[in-house]
Length: 222
Image (cartoon, rainbow, N blue to C red; front, side, top):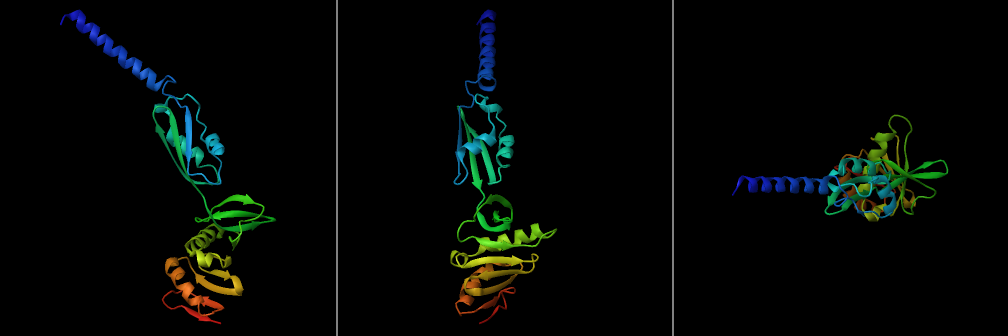
């Protein structure tokens, strides 16, 4: 092969590499054409896309998925998000929405609370069957809300249907108020799974008061 031929081949390879790099990284040929949103139920796809703020035509390899994730997770209804890209032109946003396990009253309205104790959405009326959280104000409100929410999320469906409110002055003194004016002294959120498994059987004895604060030594009274 002559030197001239070698130079032509090398030059062609360099040109092809430059062209490919430009097409992929700088042109809109492999740019964003669609944003696919998955996992939403109550949250609208349009709100997620607006929060993602991805410019149409942005080269897919230059899309900052971390920044998009952070923007989407700023939506109050979003618990977490994952963002990926799919060639040739799609950004995929997987959303996990917050789900309410209770609510707190704020004047005439209600704030929905998720399983972490986070207040995330204001509504005129809470969903039917959702427990009312009665919490302290001040420094202990956040930790108490987290403990109460953990308890509410652990209850089986049969108990959630009977739950009217969960009251606590602090994370160590949680009390459940059930239909029929039944009270359950829960204590702390520790060993919540054990307490939740015990409670249906204890309530089956027509108890008006149940204490499962120590699940190894529960007691009831009518």
